[in-house]
Amino acid sequence: MAKTVSDVVIERLKDWGVTRVFGFPGDGIGAFDSALGKAQDEGDGVDYIRPTHEEICALMATAHAKFTGEVGVCVATSSPGGFHMLNGLYDAKMDNQPVVAIVGQQGLASLGTFTQQENNLERVFQDVACYVQTIVSPVQAEAVIDTAFRSALARLQPAVIVFPHDVQAMKAVTPTAAHWVSRASREPASTDITPSEVELRKAADILNAGERVTFLVGAGAQGATDEVLKAAELTGAGVITALRGKDVIPGDVPYHTQQVGLLGSLPSLHQMHECDTLLMLGTNYPYGEFLPETGAARAIQVDLKPEQMGIRYPTEVNLWGDVKATLKGLIPMLKPKDDLSWQRKIIDEMQGWEREEEAEAMVNYDDGANPRRFYFELNKRLPDGVIVTADAGTTADWYAHHLRFRRGMRGDLSGRLATMLAAMPYATSAKFAFPDRPVICTIGDGAFQMLGMNELITMKKYLKRFPNKQFVVLILHNNDLGQVSWEMRTEDANPVWRTAQDVESIDYAGYARLLGFQGIRVENDDDAADAIETALAHDGVTVIDAMVSRNIPPLPPHITKEYAKNTGIALLKGDPFEVNVIKDSAEALFTEGVERVKGALHIGGDKKDE
Image (tube, rainbow, N blue to C red; front, side, top):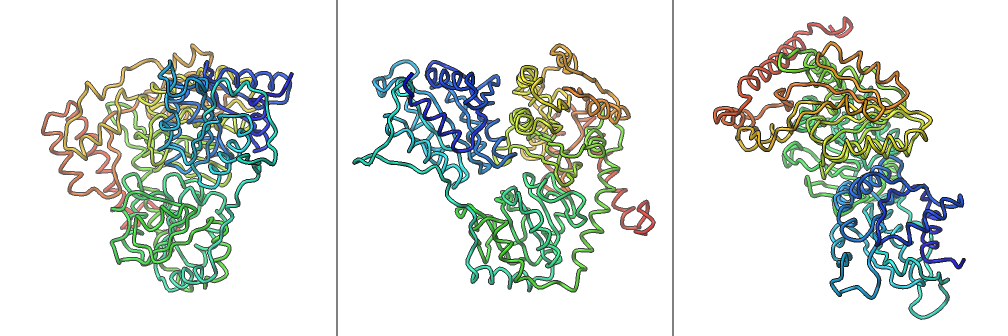
């Protein structure tokens, strides 16, 4: 049979290193789907993974890009399938990930005629994608595919290819030297960018002059762990990681104070208040209120996204470059610090903070288990090479507060989009990318009902293909959209509105068993460790249905007057959980206060610290 445009597209995908696509079929993409199936049957195709919804396809493609560094690829039919992918593509856009979406379209003759499922898809995807183009002729196909991949990789953004149904089945044409014909390259643009020596010297002079240097490290520094640590060693810096950069710096580095902000640590907050020099590496950290006061610190930013530099803090030097390559050029210019008192102070504070976190995890509440306890116990048992995901609810707070990743471990969540939907699609995608590694998804019951339950079905479908079948889903079951409930109280001074906030309770452990998986229901804090050990010992899928309190506050490291005032007003307005909120908050605050006093008096620490 003659080669079709769809066959050429599949060959081109493979040329770009694509081994897996996440797709959902439909008539608008039907001829391409058939070609994918034929190539797979002949052993010459790409792995086609079909989850339960087009939105999940796009989220899984984004996760694939995050965990592997490759281009994630998703496939769907025309509207409404293409529309469903938008949220996942915005996740890629806002977290700077290379994704290529191939979206079906009705036939060429239908364009602009208002026929069924024909919409202006180029206009629809214009905002989310760095490149959007319709393949309108066979001779154009290679150039569109290559440009989409090259653009996605260079710009770290999603690109969209619109693929009309009739073009998919047309006979392939090899581009020749002719007017209007592009003969495209299958090579990516190099992103191994290093700033000039003059600019590097400016940055080095600032870092060498600093007495209290702090690094803020984001996901854009992935792959540069050794370089970041070497630069920190030379400058005597403390290191803070943005939430998506949490796994860039190992958790056992003593001057790594984890995250900063509402879900950050007190030592990180102190660093930001007291540093005189700030180096931002591969991060577009969005919360300016937690950065130093204007003029309090000299600042440098390193990033591959020039449009995102110098917009969070008035930086003196903006280095457009890859973090790893830039630090390699910068490190020889750095002078070793003799005075490491700043770094020692940070280490001492972090030791105290860890004791405080443990104490808060061990508090027992009478209206449900303590969610912190599960993360504390999980952290002690994280297996080597594990990949952990979280949703953007209160699970993100406990993920930030209690998990400490060792080298070789990975963790991620939807960052700037902050969607609750991503935890399970991310975890499932991670399992496909690394089938020999354990994967743990930490998720709230609200998020689990949105897309998590669907993806347990996907795991059932594909589980046999994974050599390591360890896949743990830790569900914080509190019948509440917890993060939003606390935002209503602390940001808007409004009581919880149960009509909107309540999550219908179901037996999640029972649902897991219905699918043939291991399901464990946990109601007491003291059973958390056994549940996690049982899950990690099982070569299969385990759902831990953790019955936790809905009233435990995700306390920030420093409670502002506004935070306290708004919470008080919300409770006075008749919050339905007023009594338990007050009681549980008092328990948490009391424990926090006691630990800080003990730390100040050197009580309860290791002997060597006393």
